[in-house]
Length: 205
Image (cartoon, rainbow, N blue to C red):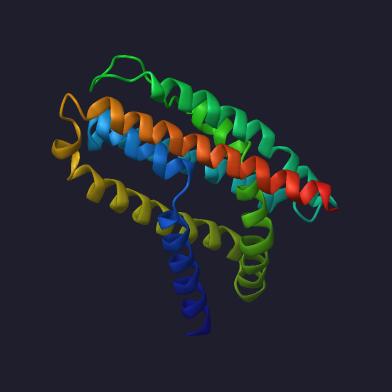
């Protein structure tokens, strides 16, 4: 019963993490407006695959190396640069259904890889719980990854689906450039936020 409760708590943690506004949600919302719900799922699935790869890497090596937390904040500069790059491309969108794909797997993966806060979240919150579950049951760390990511995926897809229901209201010809400029500025906000938090940590340590 205790293990079931732990697993359910992990699933809930994934649900909450998926619902927290961030660059992935902003990118998925942008694509939902630009190309519709079904194509916006590409952004979600690419983010999902990227996070699974990164999380698996963290779980595999965390106890093999003594990694300075400053490293994870330092790589946030890469993530901020990728966000700024995406924001510039979104800013240029003037009509729905453009042929150029903005959120390719390479860009999404670089964004996730360079998101130092994602690494910190996994190391400080997820890894301890994964290893507690691993002590309670064989393969616990794998179970943690499966249930956390299932919760994250369900939450993120649900949010994008709900947002896409308002697409018809937001794709009017005069509204489109304004909406995409808003999402561009939102991506810039997350880039600046990432930089500020990283600089604040690195300059106080």
